[in-house]
Image (cartoon, rainbow, N blue to C red):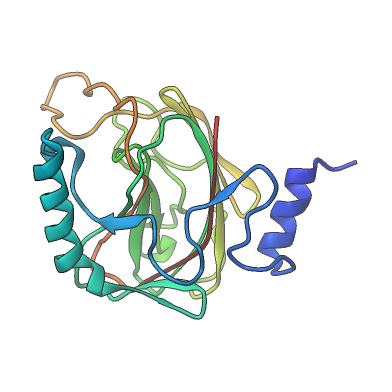
Length: 222
């Protein structure tokens, strides 16, 4: 008998489940109606430790960036002209599901704990390398185990499991990253080891100047 999560995941990818309705044990990060629970990008290393000043940073980021992220027909749409979108809440270890769609030559990613990223891009623009790889890795593997992307313009489904400093990634049901160390990125100096991974941080939908679409964003904290 197939595990219940596998059954639900297959239903989601085949369009048989209602969009933006979390399966049992998961919480919807996107409610399908608006951007409640999300905010404009305030990078981890630039957060002000004073709560009032941090609130002011969020307000400024929202005013500047949120107009470029809109919700239409149960889908988060990005026009490519602002900055990344991040969850207002920080997370540590989790399982994340997210459906995404890009256009030809598109480039994006999912940031976990604010850094580093799990790659989303057009494989045809990247020498046939598929999505799901760990772009920021330099010592540990960075490329996906296989290309599992659907044709550009179709919906893709990520399942991402983050535990400690390791991550596993499934793209459209195919394992593309197998329990691999995530390397820190911000503050990296040439020739030196990668900085430690943040213990917690936001989940981000990465801006790279392209039109993007996201839906069915579910999380289960571990």
